[in-house]
Length: 395
Image 1 (spheres, rainbow, N blue to C red):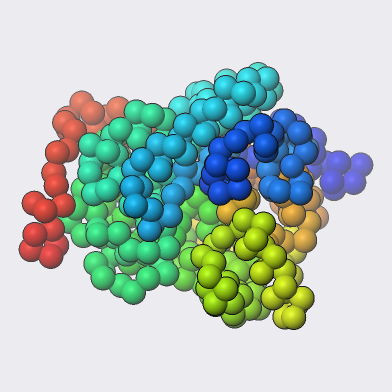
Image 2 (cartoon, rainbow, N blue to C red):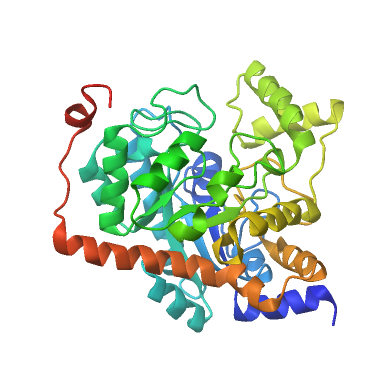
């Protein structure tokens, strides 16, 4: 058997539990949720990174669907609810392949059924509009992680890609983390500033995740995780899920991406826009300025380093498919995961360790968050604190 055969056999038993996929946003942007126009039961390779046949080919057994909305959305809470509704519609349309999962036990049950466990993560604290009641509402609707920021600061937390304002988490930000712990909602530290990562680790009594982030020591981008933070994961119990986005994994792609983003803005597009019109602008730029290409080996280099810094029990995968214009060679879409597992097998990773990377760590961290929540709910009522009350003095 080849390494690729071995990888597929391993994924049949321990499939990928991926931390982040932006399919709902792509469906919103491309067809305004016309799910007939982008029927994921069929091959959507001309439009999307994700469809059910390619999820199956990729050995995906669980997916956190991102219910992301842009930070400049006029009503981010309503838009987030529409994203949640999109995920529910997808699950209802494809019951043979997708099933909702709210707990670690659900993930295991769905795996045994041979379906894909579908979870949700909200990408950015702007989705709760500075309201702990809204946070609880999202949890009640099935959201199982909140990324504290997206690309811009929120009033209570600093983003990795904005000018520092809070110095990490404010007093209200720490209360958000505590309330997430009480609920059993995972604290996601992708996108946040390193100061916010450290403050959240200090504040959290439950394991945290990075739903789609790589190693800053390998690629010096502020979206990636510094070694001192990776080294804290064993004590916290958290999981860092490597991402595939070229501009976060390949140093040569960082400068190129900055120029490509500026070109998008000059043509009147948001730099994250992946609609057909925007992609034409992207492709034209790429023809004039060839794009540095990441590969499967590039991503494996990050995992090798992250394993050294955090340990095998604290690694996972969060590809960020349909949330990026470009992908590495060999990881072109959700069918590509076996190529990464084969590369790691060739590098000497054991099957036991790979089972942790693909499946076991993601299940364990959600189970641990649920366990912490059961304890906290015995002693702590829901918090009705407000940002005004906690941050009035600039806390």
